Image (cartoon, rainbow, N blue to C red; front, side):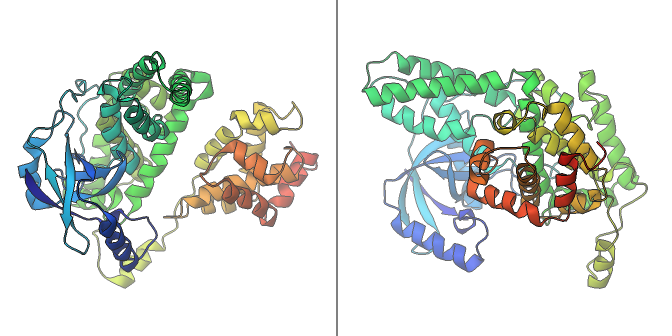
Length: 469
């Protein structure tokens, strides 16, 4: 067995820490690592910084580092058809690097069903792609293994361990791979239900089977717009990534400055790409609902889906721009002057997101009167975003790098509707029903803060009928 170094451990520590804090956390993590601890290697060909990158995972979905760059070409032939292989920890350097051994032969029967590209080739050059989220990277590790493991009494505990890690990731995207995995993993759960197992294991497999069935059903119930909700959630994450330093937007501007025809030509290529789509409902990048429904139906790959996200974000940001982008200037004064240019406010995004939020099942459960139906909520949100407070909300919604602002505004609106008598229950009980964040108490606090917002009286007057409806 050959030994390889695993680096980048400190950068996998929780977000929001300083480099010094991440270093300390990484040292503590590596100090506790025991020789023989199993890990999984996973290729990341979509990695925008290094297409040869190979990530290292523990517990199936927890990325803990990367194979040292110089070793990736040597390790790559040892990976199986899914771009994976098993390894074990075999030591560390006493600081922030540990080492792994790779067995002579990777685990067998791990192939993933491949499909030909459904959409035309994206015109964006290599290097102008979006990286898959950490959750989706983890999903690509655990799902193929769960799909292909032999299910029997001896493997039941291992299958359950993988299943518990897979289920929170089972409805992340609309791509073909995820749909394919859900279908086959459901069959695995069905097999497990028929085994003679301890009662606790048997009951858990029953629950998992029903939960995954519900998830698969959601993706086919068009009226509930689950596909759109998944599409929008991924697009929001992609936008955060695109806005980062050296992210998609910055790289696109550099590319456009050097390309013949400048930004307008680069944007035209993206527009032409949508016009060449094989399905008419894919040709309008502004209609997210149709995009979501049709992409799911067309069974596109994860990479194709991310190509669409990148193109949609770029068109939303640059469509209508004429001429070249101003060159990236390192002069601080000039850069600050550029940043002070007023941005056009987007009212459509808050309208769409708030209307979708108030159409979810929780709203019917906690509304006080049946008259507060979808038609009422649509009218309420539209009136709010046409009121004197529309700019206040739109500006907060669009705060760059502060995506939590969107969750806060949603909380403010829900809290104000509760305060105005539209919803029944406590802030905590309503927040738990919504399940919009991992910490319902945090969302409950946002609801309580709603009464401090400048548009609080407007909402109260609207509900009471003092405002024209």
